[in-house]
Amino acid sequence: MTEEREFYTFRGYLTMPTRQQMTPSMEDYLEMIYRLHLKEGYARTTQLAARLNVRASSVTKTVQKLTRLGLLNYEKYGLIRLTEKGEKLGNFLLKRHIVIENFLKLIGVKEPYLLQDTEMIEHHLSMDAFQQIKFLYKFLKANPDVLKRYYQYKAEHIKPVTKPAADD
Image (tube, rainbow, N blue to C red; front, side, top):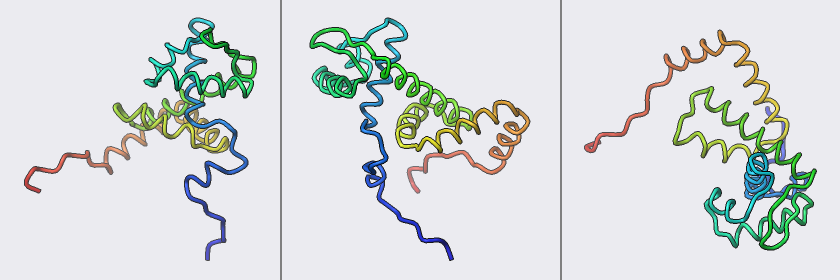
């Protein structure tokens, strides 16, 4: 018999008190602001709107929320700059994105799913799960023989997905 555990719906896990006060969307904004910060030292609402495919009004609302959390310095119609706290979190968010994307690429996830899957996964991992994926990724990169065996196993056991015929 299995042990009794407390289960929640997906939304239930997202709203647990232990979750941080940032939404996945806010994390995406901060990560993009950090990317722009690395290139130019600042960001603008128009850049964010274009890069994230959202309206400028949505950018303004989210940037104001991030400012209230102490992650940004922003004045209406001005430049968006990271605070020290925002820079640290932005750095982590970008690194997390890169690790997840590289791990998925390593195990064979390809475009057009790679970016979409990365985005959907990165925001919903516990720190423990992220650290384990990061460790496994580093292990596989450091042990090409194990990775080669994985690819061989995969080739032997996974049949390519094909579209069903029109008359099926």
